[in-house]
Amino acid sequence: MTSLHFIFGDQLSFNLPNFANFSPKKDIILMCEVMEEASYAWHHPKKIAFIFSAMRHFAKDLQNRGFIVDYIKLDDPKNLGSFDEELKRAIKIHNPQKICLTEPSEYRVWQKIITWQKNFGIPFEIFTDTRFLCSQNEFRKWAKNKKELRLEFFYREMRKKYKILLDATNKPIGGKWNYDNENRKSPKLGMKSPKRISHQKDEITREVLNLVAQKFPENFGDLLPFHFAVNRSQALIEAHHFIVELLPKFGDYQDAMVLNEPYLYHSLLSSYLNIGLIEPLEICEMAQMAYLEGRAPLNAVEGFIRQILGWREYVRGIYWLFMPQYVEYNFFAAKRNLPDFFWGKKTTMICLNEAIKQTKEHAYSHHIQRLMITGNFALITGIDPKQVHHWYLSVYADAFEWVEVPNTIGMALHADGGIMASKPYAASGKYISRMSNFCKSCKFDPEITVGEKSCPFNSLYWNFMQSHEDKLKGNQRLKFVYPTWHKMSEKKRQEIIEQAEIYLEKIDRNAEL
Ligand code: FAD
Ligand code: DLZ
Ligand code: SF4
Image (cartoon, rainbow, N blue to C red; front, side, top):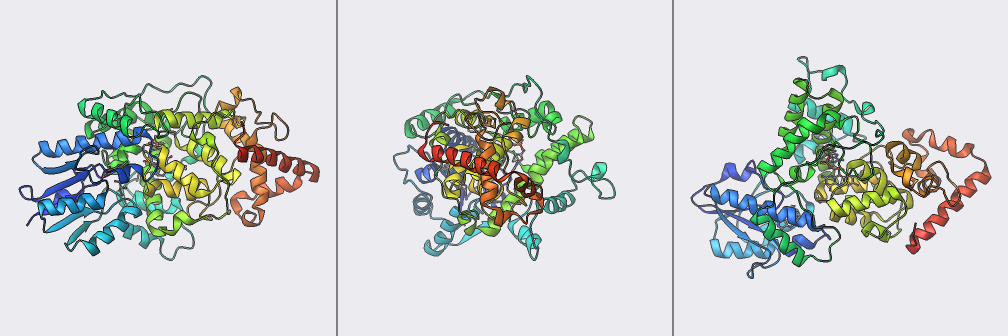
């Protein structure tokens, strides 16, 4: 019996359950580059090139190991443009008795599969994606009957399940589960991070780069220079480089932001994890080993592992639990349009300009830039969550809906009303000034709230808080905010709101800000 195994562009791993259910002499693998996937969001050109190059390298690797691969390139004249049509074509040609799939990472593709099962008149076998450390069912069980879902408790269960950073009595090593409060150092003066790896481009990558340049000339973002890892061995080099050179300081400077230093001590591993080039458990175990061998401190190792074993799995659980309604949430009824400067027009607000410039150049910006600069700005100015979601889904090489949506709708915009995080991550310019060196070269002053030199984040922060007082005043994590606001004189509060209105009016006109 021949089975056709359809492998998607973010499933590039020999650990995929398909391979445990494969008959090498008879079964066929289908992989296809299709315009539908390349254009459902306005993907950054680097993201498209990265995925196509990695898909082609994986297909070549499969062929070298003797697998039969039906691979359709985007510019193949036979290309039919969508998963549906390519699968129909492959069924016609190969006449399989069964279609084998690993569950897709995104709801959108899951809906397609349900239709295929109904319409194609052929049996489907769908495997659980064992590359994730918590299955959808396990998460559902964990979440059931809980009044509120919180990362911290989920994360502890995951530590116990995988026996990560536990002592012989199953207690957390070091006595605490979480060292987050040791991971908030401000950047040092003149701080520079170690040089990052730049991978050589081979024939496959060069061909893909030409294709992307030709087919996606209008997409936001710089295609070149391109130095992503595009296969497992290169991704492993990145992983080792991170563990040895960067992990020791990852914790201390996790929240720091520095002008012209997009990466600092961050791992840059999200893109590789998300398409399958490295596995979440293997990188957690590498980090744990670095701690056990005394090569990295506990605050760094625990902080890093929490992001992967905790946050990454938690957001996936939330996504599948609450889709499809999750993308519709709009707790603050935000409806402002995304300003043009998100798509590259210059802004004199240095923090935003820097985060967006890095995004355009590298298809990357680190978590605090995403959360506390672009996300915070979108939150406190009340930008429509759907537009913000579309932006984040487009501009980062690691962007896939299952991880992007909970981070955008839930964590950054609090549009889910608190399902994902216990408070909105709204902050004024003072936070940005403490955690970065951006404000030193900005024409605005983070210490000033009213007037021409006032940092827009300050008045916009207070305007946001007062506009949503009825929804937020009961939130224990904001318990100092409203007393501070009400302690200000009526006149001062009025001036702050008027200042915010001046900035909002400029944002609405896309005037320079
Ligand atoms: P590091 O700081 O080195 O962290 C290590 C790893 O932990 C990451 O590689 C990632 O796999 C995981 N991780 C860290 N934080 C999170 C998180 N909040 N959620 C899930 N995993 C996490 N991450 C994506 O992978 N894809 C996205 O589309 C995405 N969109 C985001 C949108 C917003 C608004 C925000 C606030 C965050 C988003 N994140 C997303 C989470 C996080 O910002 C990135 O995972 C991280 O910046 C990737 O860089 P890194 O690999 O250097 O991470
Ligand atoms: C992101 C992406 C892009 C740009 N192109 C393709 C593609 O042409 N073929 C493919 O198989 N996958 C692509 N991907 C990744 C998919 O969007 C991702 O694998 C699915 O959304 C998984 O649900
Ligand atoms: Fe951003 Fe305000 Fe600092 Fe300027 S002063 S960089 S706008 S936080």
